Image 1 (cartoon, rainbow, N blue to C red):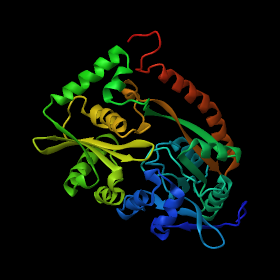
Image 2: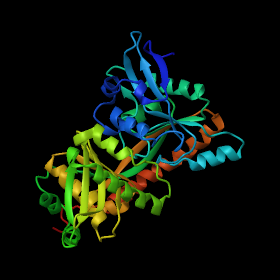
Image 3: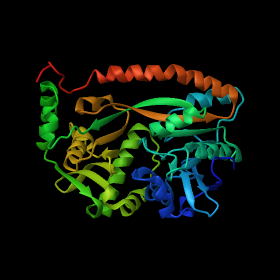
Amino acid sequence: MDSPLPLTLSLHRAIAEIPVADWDACAGDNPFVSHSFLSALEDSGSTGQRTGWLPQHLALRDESGALLACAPCYAKTNSYGEYVFDHGWADAYERAGGRYYPKLQVAVPFSPVPGPRLLRRPGVPVAALAEGMRQAMGALNCSSVHVTFCTEEEWQALGELGWLQRLGVQFHWHNQGYETFEDFLGALSSRKRKALRRERREVAESGLTLRTLRGDEITREHWRAFHGFYRNTVDSRWGSAYLTPQFWPLLGDRLGERVVLMWAERDGEPVAGALNLLGNEALYGRNWGCVEEVPFLHFELCYLRAIDFAIQHKLPRVEAGAQGEHKIQRGYLPSPTWSAHLIAHKGLSDAVGNFLEAERPAVMERMRDLAELSPYRREGGEA
């Protein structure tokens, strides 16, 4: 392939074809792009033909065969489980007689978690992977390549190479050096502080037992109950359960202490759970579910206990997943997310490019408006 380095491109229909140590040497700390997480998705049957996520992992090797760069890639036959929505693009193209699917998705399936997508050893340029993705798009007869929830650095580099750039919004909590949860509450306005204390008090008085479980503390019984929570959530909201019952114990076995489960029981019976993965720089909230509706329990398990955990473990931030302006009142502020897109058809590319040119300033304005809802005390404001 043409690139600044003499590299060879290969595509792999299973991540098991790439040695764990080689992949993880490129992937770094983010648990969602680890070999363990991605292999748990594949080995559990969560990705594959059933869900329309067909692995085509990209690898770049040098002349000796050493892996220098890789990317989690999937040939997609739909636009589900991505959280960066392109249904309108697909509809417009297919109404005009084009074929949008398959497309090549560079992403972590079912996980709107920002992080690296173009996994590289030091010295390997983004341009090398960009060229590899362009060649893979052609080889697989895909309409386009979509690198979603990438880092800002990757987004900027791909933009300089002519890729289309898209902005999104999530809500993240940032640790301002708090020593205790009370320190965090003290940074809020009086009204917001009282509201969160009241929420936590109601949950504490609900008769539930709350625990934070990690690693070996999480048993097969916990995972069986958690899959029931997960099914209750997706059946009530979306009606499509991508993750299989086998995924959860595989995740626990392979990621060990990086799996953090906020758990609620009533008289020894599981009631609710919130799944998080632990990185060096953040706690990443992922899945939630319950079998009993308890006021404020969702906020407690998903957001407030995550903040408490991050303070105790001196983590810089908590990333609590997609959507949810209600997170602002619990200390999570708007943060940008980035994605980059390469579309083979010039007409469609130009149309999408024009759309994104108009969308980006609107997203930035929305972030500014949301930031005005911050619950934190302001200088000269209420105590």
